Amino acid sequence: MKKLMLLAVTLVFVLSGYIKAEEKKIAVFDMKKVFDEYEKTKQFTKDLEEWGNTRKAEVEKKKKEIEDLMKAFYAQSGLLSDEAKKAKQKDIEDKTQDYQKKSQEIIQEFSKQEKLKTDALVVDISVAAEAVAKELKYDLLFDKKALVYGGDDITDKVIKRINKK
Image (cartoon, rainbow, N blue to C red; front, side, top):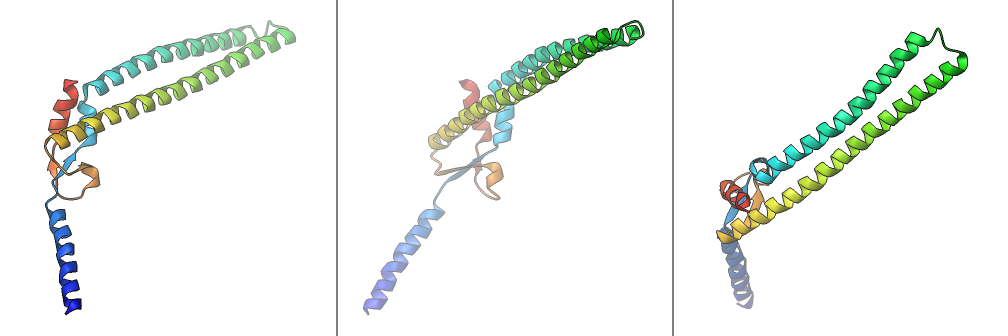
């Protein structure tokens, strides 16, 4: 009898946990869609593109300078002494190395800025999504990609919330 009573009590606790799990309200949102439609993302993309174009112009100027030096070198190479040739070649090599170094620095800085800003935008979006989910009394919130089936889509509400800031 005690075993039967213990089994009944255990069953009640297990079923009550199961029933509670069934009552959970689940929300989902599309992080990519929110990210793409977030006004700060659009501004960030524009700013980063402008920054990149400015740096690209600097590098293109160095490249043009090297090309001009090479043309001049080849045009004058028959008239130059060996020492002058070596000096010109050294100058071209130094400028080429500077060009390559500057290009690498720009790529690294671009990647760094993109990652920092993207991370900050993702945090903003996550905070807004969580606020919307809490406001609408959802128990769980998932990115749409993480949940195969189910959940109420609150993506549009998150986009409205985040663009109001």
